[in-house]
Length: 354
Image 1 (cartoon, rainbow, N blue to C red):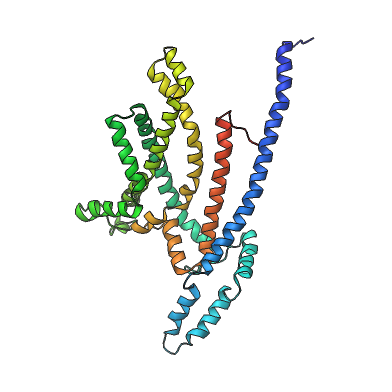
Image 2: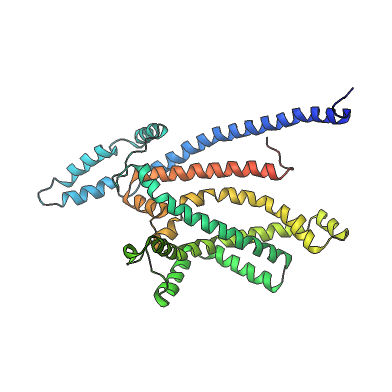
């Protein structure tokens, strides 16, 4: 006899406990398997990156040896090259060199940057903040702009608004980043003179107050952020429009309309909520972009973020910094995919984690 609660409720709660425990067990096993697989993928990715860095036409040691050998009374180029190769560990083969780097990286020792002569982690911490700010602002603006426009294009299919939004999305998808950034610089920097061509600060930056310096840096970030937003909203708008059209043609949407629900409630209560489910994968895939920086955009505008810094490191053949940066990107990508899969299973009951 059930005293504290009805018998049916007690039996239902007792039966639900094993189901919940089983679900938690499945999620835990899935996460463990994905993490173990991620280690294997990360090992392969870092090895490929190391091989590519060692296979560059010219190495950092060769460039340094060339500069040092040209000084008056300096040692010959070959002697400098042999000395620098031994100092930087480039006299080892690719596989021994990679294993040496890997053993140090496992213990959190990524060495010093060859180009800046400071610890790699220290240089990374100096430049990552600016890229996170740029990436975060552009990501939020892309979502705020692209999602409503994608929904509008789907609900007004084949209308003038749909054609305009689709055209803008296609331009954003097909237009190269460097070309659009160059157009912005030509129009707003060269023709109108509203913004500086490159750099994070203006000529009178040091004479400004603290608040003025913040405004000056914010002004110099306008064109880079506009570039990132415009290039990003194209895929987002197309993705939202496609998913919204698919949902609007579903049977339950026709049923909701047949029951006499208002079009506003059908679209924004039933259709829109289900349209957002596939966006979880897009959001998880955007995680690396928030912390990785925009290499092309930062380089074109000379913004000293992680993208611009990593570009200079790769051009100089700075293997320690380049390896750390690429490994960081690989970890973020694997983590973003894992979070996307888990969130997708959480928001969509039809998906089961195996």
